[in-house]
Length: 304
Image (cartoon, rainbow, N blue to C red; front, side):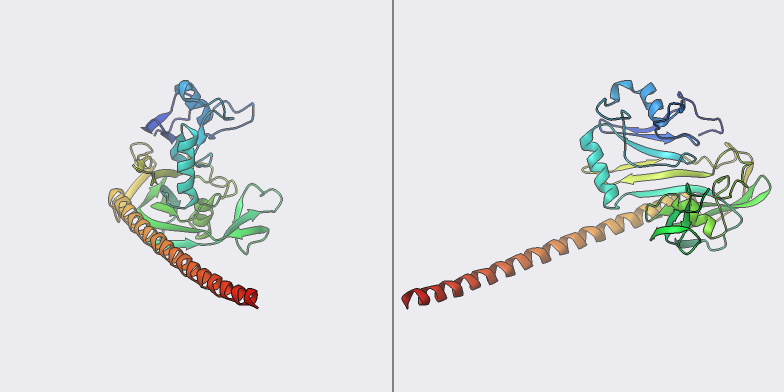
């Protein structure tokens, strides 16, 4: 990842198999678009680099398994056939996918680990309909529960101003969730032009990067990391001053927690299946007993 703008040629592949490609999406580029004036999208990059893998039966030629905002960079999974897309879709639908984002936030976040729990809805105020908002604010429609895990990695400065480097794990998947949650606690993402209402326009990009993507596919999980773009070698304006925990150890802990949660889900599904089978057996016995009584009654009635 560099500070240079995206181009058709600048496509970095993180993972490739017969079923999936995971790319490191550049910042400030759309995944796809129906607009004629959009000359650069991830779809066009894929078409340029892998024309033989495009599926003419789909509108864009490629099946994107999930979304990333225009301003967000990082790991983006693309399915290369319909069956693979279905398998990935089920994982996202069942919420078994683990994602984690790196970000630089304005100010120094005091609470080193916290769960941000604010319901998010659509903003209906004129001029802000492209934005999301927190439940209870003016114009907030149809808010839905939303949770984000925040872990502080480092404190430092960006272009002389205090900032905090964090790992964000979305526990739900609402539009603009990470951006809205961080803004709500008074620590907006550096370079977030939209949720700073146009004030934070000096950084060359919004500092939000999809670092980790784990999809528990069978028989082999898909696990990819997309590098760390928020380092002085890439952007000298970011100067770390104190480190609380390493990125590697934090991600390892996130994956271990994910593994534990998956084991709990497996146990819960197994117990649920046992309860259903037990109920079916009981229902079957009751039905047989009811049929026996009914047959006896019919026999007695016929004998009369």
